[in-house]
Structures are given as structure tokens and as C-alpha cells.
Length: 122
Image (cartoon, rainbow, N blue to C red):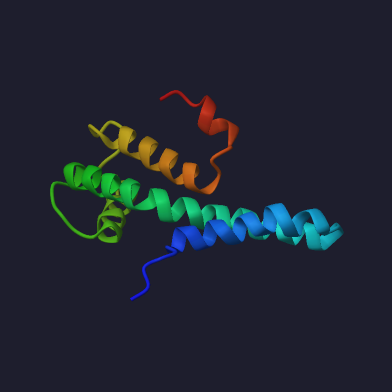
């Protein structure tokens, strides 16, 4: 059984190749597409390395907020339903903090250099 390299290592190697070897040789529209590909691989890399922890923390917050267990998808669907029908709102203890932390975690994966992420109060 082959255990190495990991998915994360493979993604990072391809991204490094694109950024360090391919992009300097490219021009115009092809260079743009290479940057898009490198950015997409960066998102995949961060998703692989950060999402398991942030997803577990999100699920724990949702379990506490909603008072029961379920899959992350089920808990999020229920949260959306309760927000939509007005059962809970920003005055619900823990909701604002949950939404803030979840948003920060998702932005940190998708756009870690987003200036608003760094400037927003914690």
C-alpha cells in the first residue's frame, strides 16, 4: 500500500510547479489561466489542511446551539430553517459568535489574504 505522497503534498507540488516553473514561462491569457489554476489549488490545499478542524468546531457549535446531534449538513439546514422562520435570531445566545467564527474559517480557506478578514474585530 502506498501512503506517500499525501493528497495535500500532491496538490502543493503541482501548485509549486505552476507558480515557480510554468507561470514565468507563460504570457497573456495562458498566464492568467495558470494563476487561476494555482489559486484553485491553493484553495484545495487549505481545504485539505484546515477544513477537518474547522468543520468539527462548527459542528460542535451547532450541536450546542441547536441542542442535538446530526451531520454538519443536517445541522446547517436546521439552522437555516430556524433563521428563516424567525425561531432564532441574532439575540439567540451563541448564534452571532457561531456565524462570525464559521464565516472567518470559510474565508480563511477561500481567500486568506482578504483584507476584511484581517481588519474585522475578533
